[in-house]
Image (cartoon, rainbow, N blue to C red; front, side, top):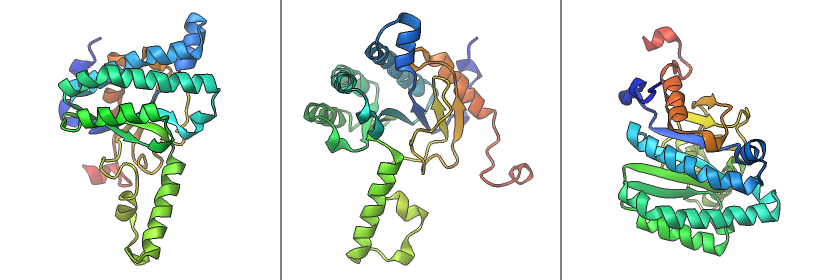
Length: 247
């Protein structure tokens, strides 16, 4: 079925966030291979979904690439993931730039290995002029880490007299978040059949539509992505109001 033709491009979510889950299980269950094999093949899905986002007019795509909790995984897997990140970013930067994609990063950047920081910085600079699609990688990121950091910064500015506590509201808090320059996601997708948010953009997804699919991330292709967008377009988003108020 041609799902792309069923999408109303005038109502495509401006910002889609994805929890890319299932690489390890995909490798073990389908091929009897190790988890790294799954991560390597997951890169193909990233490329495919980035292309699909441009095709339908999504302006912001944010991918949960590596969480703060992922540092607790076996050291060999963490090392392999960091090496894969460097290799992939180096390989894809030119194509991203040619296709109008700007790379962005949120998370504890300084915790990344130095070679990762260097490669990411070069990619950020090389794509900084692009505006067709903002591709954000959440690296060494978690929402509780982000909120804790924001609270500390708010408290410090209040202590210095830069802000008055009476002025603290949702809009001000937003300015202290990693995503201060990005609109909140309208659609959150999680692959692999798990039904968790996993400490991802908890503030930002307050009114996002949630879409869970059993498809493992390496198998999450354009058609699966389009199905998620169509599902989003068939929902009624009320934001606390009634259906009658909307009509």
